[in-house]
Length: 216
Image (tube, rainbow, N blue to C red; front, side, top):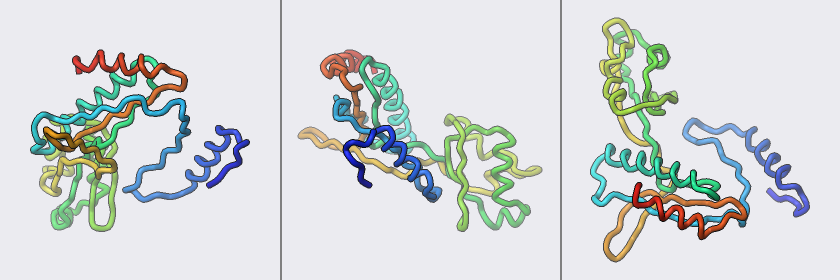
């Protein structure tokens, strides 16, 4: 896609958004984000976050993600900061994989499972309900205790979700990757890329972020 240099950037950006909005994407593809880039608001500082020891399981990985997400908020609140991008950040995803034989036994459908979860207002992370032919997204909120209780959710009279499905606490498909290699160590982690507002003082932003690092 090309534009004449004289074209107003706001109009150009809206034209692109309108064209992209007409496209249809599959359930596995996130909706594209159309952003304007200004060299005056380029990357100011980049920080790499990783644990002191190797991540051994999904829970430890999620704890790193939660901690990094809090740091992102702290950095974004600094004067002169436009936004903070996360690279290598993984989001939690709860997958519910029904057993076809169990569904037939109790005369249940995938729609029944979705309806039961919504009706009982169970709060879990955004996740997926998967069968061989179809896939439903579960867009809700959560904490670890609710995920543990999810298997006790009643789908029918005397029928728990754990009786008819496998519940997997995992992460969404990784769409970005961050890895640091030094003389002392190497490993994966999460990068926070701080982008300043056009005209903001880069040195002041860097100094303000350095001041809060010991408290994170």
